[in-house]
Image (cartoon, rainbow, N blue to C red; front, side, top):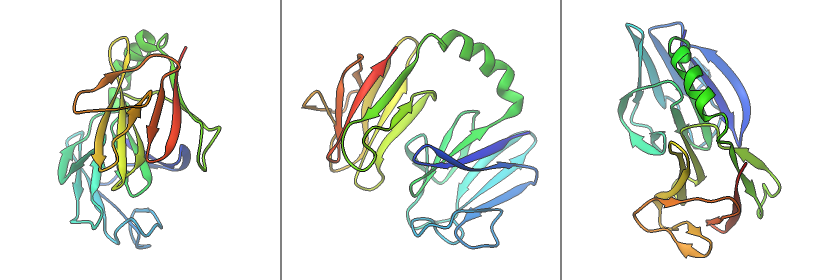
Amino acid sequence: MPKVIVSIDGVVIKEVQLTKDSTSLGRRPYNDIVIDNLAVSGEHAVLQMAGGEVYLEDLNSTNGTYVNGKATKRQLLRDGDTIEVGKYQIQFVNEAAEDSAASLTGEAADLQAAIKVLSGAAAGRQVPLTKEVTTIGKPGVAVAAITRRQRSFVVHHVEGAGRPALNGIPIGAEPMPLKSGDLIELAGTQMQFIQT
């Protein structure tokens, strides 16, 4: 059975099984998934289930709905996709797809990496890079994404006027390969990429 895991700054707040054909998400208390945050619209988005597939639809929200760092109006969700509303991350988990994911995890288990925050309010926090795509930064200001490739990681600019820098060099349109110890700077926050 598909489910979503809601988190902010890496802290899981709630886990919701998708049992109905339509699951609403928003700030108002009558939503199925209530996210009480001003960046989230009253009726922000809806998750629609149809024959084992789950679609995410943005309900013309003020700040938009993002899937894996890209703005979307309506999208078919795949296991492991990350939905972003405001500062919240919502991971989509489809139990039916878990068997195939287990074999992938076995192969990628030796490829472990994390981002360590060096400055700002979250200094000292370490964020493991366990997903296919991990977005960092502030939506609307500067957002970068770190993408897991077969045997490596790359970082690229997603949105915002502030471009991320890798070891002091601004990142252009092309994704840049990451190696352990690399320093990423985004919107005034310094982070270090660590691969083990």
